[in-house]
Image (cartoon, rainbow, N blue to C red; front, top):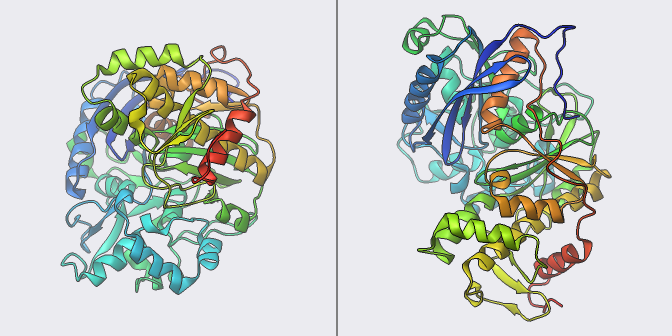
Length: 500
């Protein structure tokens, strides 16, 4: 794990590929060159727009801008995206209105869906424990509201919106199809389906022709149409790859590809993805974790998530620390990250997804050796307050890690941490080094998901197999902090009790 590999005896001549990462907050397009090392030659980052047509337009513009700087012929283009988010489209594929986002799910509609299908049966079929975010729930809600976009409408996820305007084909990847609640997860030794499931879609009164085709692992989604090629300045027929779910793509790119490998991915949400041989679906459901298949389809994956990790840091600066100098507070928090932990925040901006799912959980500051405080206002020092927030996020990650270990056995000691706020924030990174067991390795890529999508596209088209470089000397092995984790879990699961 965590090494660059080429499937040839000699290093190939440098080649280039494009990668797209449609994120919750921002969308990134990267031009990556693959030679002795992986190099991010050019990146364009744009805010993810609210509308489906606008998303297609900004991605096309960013691709055109980035591709113009390529020093080598571009071999392929890969598209990764966040899960659950997408758009209704007309029969012609034209988006209708705003994106329906994973952050905007309706709990009451989701509860009715679960009541109809049964929680255990629904999870057993899909491996996904959070129907509130799913396209099926969006569709049911819009049906009840008699939304004007529905007649003749189809669904395209964020990735398929991009792929369709490049290739003319409505195509997605199995790792993103799995996030919809409409794709049946087969047994570990059974092949993946290439279509959405008719019985699951029927729960929302839908048929498979309303959803895109699911491409098999290793295949390409399509090729650039003449119109797209002309608009982008790229050759007609350029292969386009549906790379997949952002967290899964990032983990694959970091070298997490075999059972026991794991990767920590942080953006608006934080996800801990572990490659496993198999796991009990019922046990995983009880812990609020998703089961899926790895990017290459060979193994199962276990995904635990905190949906508001990066979002909590942004909340802290906006609501907890208004008017403070962000750079100064982050620098001061770095100095506190090695000090004994005196307080942490339970990081539940919108409930807890896993482990021990509980939508009623809220933010709460815990002082060790003192009473649990109902308000974050008791820490006057901005750096100390931010450190308490970050410590809570890391302890939540450590709890997810421990819960995964209880389900599947120990992971490998090395844990890949994808770039982004969880690795670039010095205090957050140092706290992870202290509190998480094992050795942490940062992915040395500014945009690991977009660059990973480019690497995956190059792999499928040219056969080149490579991993993004990981740091080797910036983290000593840690045994973690079991006593601190126990205090956190006690506070998180017994909110009415004092924390000793």
